[in-house]
Length: 284
Image (cartoon, rainbow, N blue to C red; front, side, top):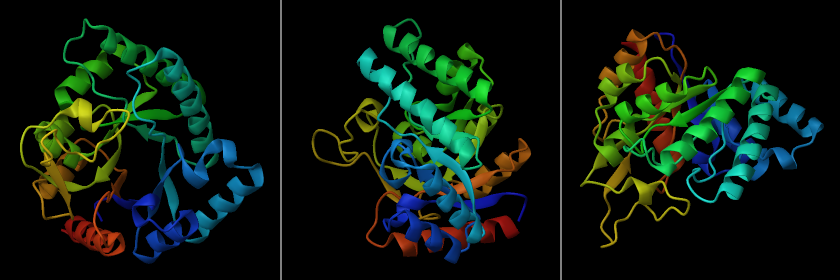
């Protein structure tokens, strides 16, 4: 299997936490990523007993937690709101360690190309604090790719230089939103990749990252009502999965390819297709 593992985001099934975990195991996944910024895994709603019950259930189904997701809509905006998001992200990082993973993923907003503006400094300050906390407790805050090119994200991460920061590499986001090369991007971000999403898509026209990754998502639609991109089942879009997997192996990545399916009427069928698709790729 080329030393890579297949995971699934539990929420992609739209079945609830426990049924989603069981379904991931049934379809042949080895790990699960779970949203902790909302729903049944939100840290403020979990007792010590419930955390143990969930971890035991995950393990009893032959799975591990690949990562938790702390998605809260980005950090460019009101500083008091950012303070609340930072503190809550730290609680999710604490929870991740209790669930026996050291990776927490999230979009942070769009990293500006202009490094001199306030928005760039705001994101630097936020991520520096989360990176420092990650170093302190032994966890990684992994920024998801998509709102900017791999080169821009690398420059941003280099400017902070924190061992507690990493990348959750989503090749489809790079294809769909900014038209970046997801194979080349692996090499660009090779020092930071700690987790990946396996997703596919097609870019229909130039997108507006600030709109796609704003605090209030608008269904990936431009002002004229026409979509900028579409997410499709694995193998039906523009992601070069052979090249992507080979590049990940080439840089020494041996972690999870975690399937994310955000659209579609039959997520279970699409995820099963994705698991089978990835298994075939990894068996080559």
